[in-house]
Image (cartoon, rainbow, N blue to C red; front, side, top):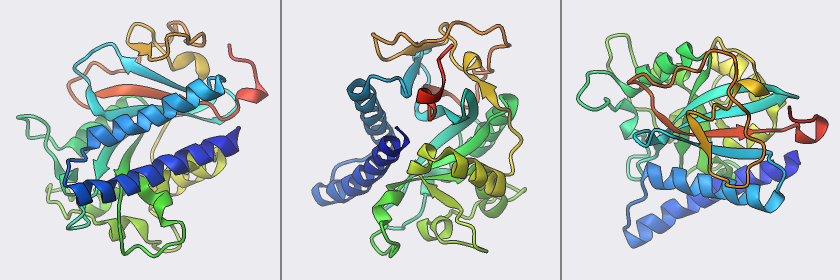
Length: 267
């Protein structure tokens, strides 16, 4: 089960990398929203083919939500989940930098990174960036596995965004070369290796977070399954609803990744 998931995430990363090449060759726009939609489609295909509910996708009932913003519940132990709030950013091919990472939201003076972090704190979650990459000079073995990579928001803030709100825009090389023996960016497929993913969170992200149980993570009033045949949607929890109605970070999709579905019964 887990091996299939690792291969799925690797293929998503490889496709993302290769589509950057294609978009450059034919001069078409390859937006963050498009890449995210491609990722979601691949996950949905996996769900249909395997029919085991190890990956489920839920869409916000509020249609105003942002298509680049994601929530991920990752099972790290049987029926125990990390809550990841994720902002997608793509590489700018010519400069090899993530130039939109310093984005301000709407007409506000607030940087997107602050809104992401505030949302994570309110919801006991871990703020992350999902980087969409293409780096032709990257000489790492299996470099296309880094077509999608995860970087801790805390690392970005501490190293590229100062207290006086001046940005040094990070490049691909800044984030994807080991420093002091620790890689600051993790390939997406580590979502299928929960033991090592949690170790990365503990070593690099330095975030306070909650471990969620399965019956806390789906709220039918606010989220709807994209699978009409989904029989695994959990009912409204008696726990306080996650704070998702603030004018801050606006995730449109919630992805539930179960890594131990064969080891327990869903409740």
